[in-house]
Image (cartoon, rainbow, N blue to C red):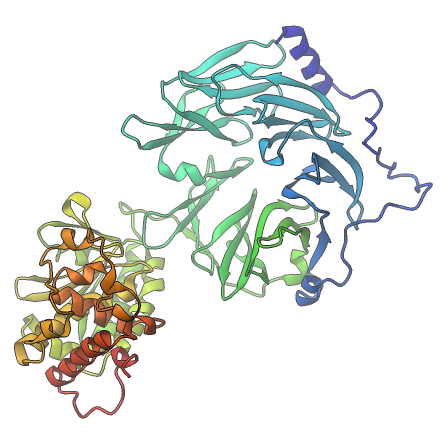
Length: 619
């Protein structure tokens, strides 16, 4: 494109001003200082809507007209809606308390999803048209001023710098920047890749986030200077990095619980631990953060002050079948966002008045950011005492942090969990599991072990050497370490089910050594069936005839590997809620009853009248 066109375009946006008349389809906004000569157009506000009633007027609804791919953003004081209307992609400028349209502009773009808004000021905006591979500028009345075609071979989006004077983009040879006033491009960073793209402009335009695919198939994400191209930081956590001014926020998900890390460029990193886990950050506005979490059919929004660490406001919205997105902070402290019915496609804009749902909560949710190299030793000592107390109550030994590493068996790699909130979350879960067994059960199960105690190691990760895991949810192992009988558990959402499975192996060993109940176990299987006595061939079995309907004789393919895994899988699933369907056949009932009889005999529970947790599906 000619250099003078670029200069004219840049000058028209950046040096003040727009001229000319609006296009036919655009209605010029009423001067806010003068009363309108005609009645104001009808707004989109829905008076006394269901959500307004449910939230005591804290959330107001503005129903959108038919359309898809909606998103909202601010241009000056005005809220602007981008969506794909009945036949066109449109931008609609909204005004007033009722959100009435004052400008409707049809874009020369087939799909709203191709419009990536990247630069906005009071005088206009710029976006990348992914369909046309062009950077487009519009004036304050949403009129297109012009578009700049990007070079052939561009990968991903071109990004407009926050000064409105530069565009950044990737090719397979590196990262480039174009000066819009001169039309000259230069290479910022030379790095060859079959695929790489810019995925964000951060810290008020100072940094570019770039992701590229490496030759081994993995991905690399880094931050580079928008001026020099120098690499500033690298790492997986950069993928979730959000910034507002010099404030940053990221989520780290490689441990037992998600970490939410925030701070400023020149400050110390901190963690905030929202009440609900897991949660997603849906908005960051400098020192304010909004989290969204789904539970019990409700989508709960919580506003936190990152300076004080306090929860300022909370509201619960309908969660089933609704998708919320495009969150924006309002000048008065409220929050705008879009909610879409995933079935009908109908959507609305919502405004949440956070002052009306103020939280009366003095708890501080922020804390020092700890690492494996610099853990919270005082906090971990308190957790250790709590774990010891639980262990003494149920007759087991519970090991945390570095104590758990002392029982690492050959062929496995343990990673210690160093985050106190992880233990605060999962220790109550473990106690609930232990409580489901009869009194004295664990001591009886560990009769042959040192101290007659089962050692339970709580860990950040449990990995077999080579990374192989025998089944999908394997985050635990049961093993002997000398004379100690051990269970190693990852602190994870699988912990409950995995404990039942690993404990089932200990139970199985006692039943086999003290009774003859399992001696004729194979007679319970379908005629002609033989266990593989190996994991991999069993998991590769393609014939599912023993796993379906009235022919079910096993929980899954893994159960067909060894007799001990068959029994452990049955006991695992029988101890969990919602699994009655697995025990509908005569074969599965016979197997479950044999296991239950064996446990009662081996553990001296034959006269116990109360049904045990794994007996819930017996007919």
